Image 1 (cartoon, rainbow, N blue to C red):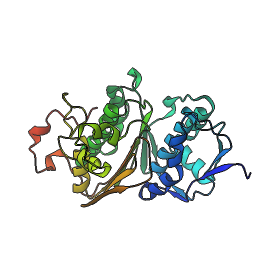
Image 2 (image 1 turned 135 degrees about the horizontal axis):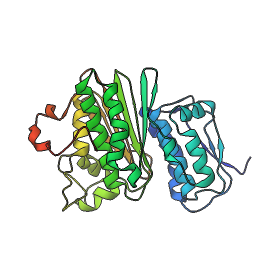
Image 3 (image 1 turned 90 degrees about the horizontal axis):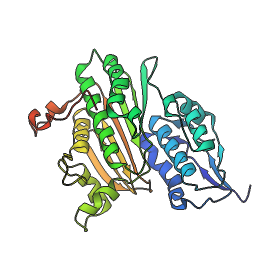
Image 4 (image 1 turned 180 degrees about the vertical axis):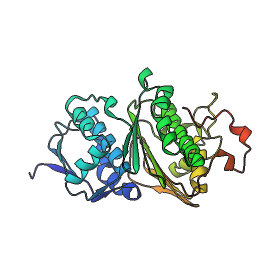
Length: 312
């Protein structure tokens, strides 16, 4: 046991404490392809893990396996982690991936559990997982779930759409991005994570060379700022999400390549954090005061007439 290097997960892997998890795992991104032996990933100490924690843990373990970071990685599963992975549909998927480096994403299904729905969506670049197919498969069920709160439904669709489009357009070197949404009649949580090129790597090269990583992250949230220059990409996706979150008195967390952004109600800040290769986005939307694009006072609704809230 003395020769084993432990990556010990913190007690709490959840949205407001995800930085603690990044502190533990960030070194792994530097050992891509090195096949280092005698590494143990220990989750036995975890007491709480939420939707974002499950997603980030899955993406981390997927990266380790796909990129040969270790030789035969050893995992100490904690009961809390196993239960949560099962609840969100990821435990079988992860075990299959660790054994074969392949995963059947068809096992991820929209689920209603009591007062909640859980909707894990693989964002793969194939016809079976096209924008239209995902819209047909999942959006009608969410619309039906919120049929008595039409403005909430519109807000949820808009944020889901913007997150999906953002990852499809920018995470070009990670074809296994996964989005998870969880909701009740009172709130909706949306999370997506990848381990490809993050916001800093995609947007930074087209901005002024004097911009820091924090500056770049702030710029990514401005209306009209895009890494897809000379295209019809509007560069307003993250800005729309940030504005809707502020108006709904919700929360937005973004982690990308050593920096993070937090919007909590009207307050926001950006700072440095431990490294995550790629981008993590988390949205919490209370449904007591839902907002839509029409509520964004700085622009008329005609500015956004090409943006659809009920399809991808």
